[in-house]
Length: 412
Image (cartoon, rainbow, N blue to C red; front, side, top):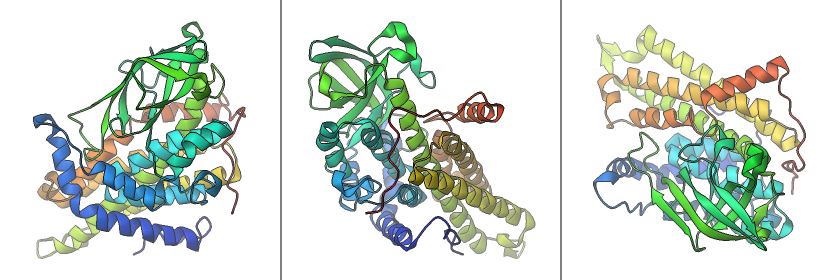
């Protein structure tokens, strides 16, 4: 069964050609090695961490146009739409979450923020090489004592003439050790709480920028995660993204894009768990028949199919709205909440279907479960998504227009 069929109301032939290209890349250039990369990530505490596989894979993703898939060609992108971004994320996470994380931070959180909020100079200097895959980018919002409560951040940026002096530490930063550019949020007026936050484009090569890998992760072990420390970094005023004090709005707008990619990736993980379960259930026999003949196994699989289709439809609806230039915070939040929760539940059922084998890394489903757990936390916890949905339903929250919206898709 082709689990991506029957979506013609959203996808076209170009999207399906893209899906084949991404799947071919992921299955041939990543899948044969991901087991060992995941294992080596788990052993990173035992010795020096090289992560030698990361940069070549990211460079390859750039060459194939994945990193700039939804950006206009004038900014170095592939000129495709936001549904194409979802397709890329689905297919990458179908093989491993670490690949989709790259799309979330480089494309969703950082580069789309430059498209939405950047001026022409910033877009030419930073967005173009990032969309081309020549430069890699990360997003620095979370701090050791500031996660969901972003307004509690301690990082500061003090104006000194034509520069800001940036100081602070960010943690749980994906691509911390390999990114060339960072989108950094810091307080320019600590007395104003979230209204005193501003956003800056920072280059790794500048004095005072250091990164350190984070070890001991439960999942996404094949990817790089770490902390980034900024010590008296001189950031030109020209590298401030948006107006001073506008950083919180930029951060939240970025999370709309990031959550979209996370939801799309979670859909791919659901599909991977279902496919693995089908293969195993047809091969494994108990009581003289394949376990696929047992009703309770069928029940788990039917729930997997339901969660796959509902997740994909919610993601594609959000992507369709992004193409139209419509605010989609409610729809994207719902897609992220539903798809990530579903991916964890489906991966858990996949382990149950595999029995004892599912509890070892001989089969990929244990990796799926570990990877799925993180997405329920990052880029907005499950609990935050629930509260947001309630607030929208109660009329306590609405999609207020921003000073600058993400541009709608314009066919080229």
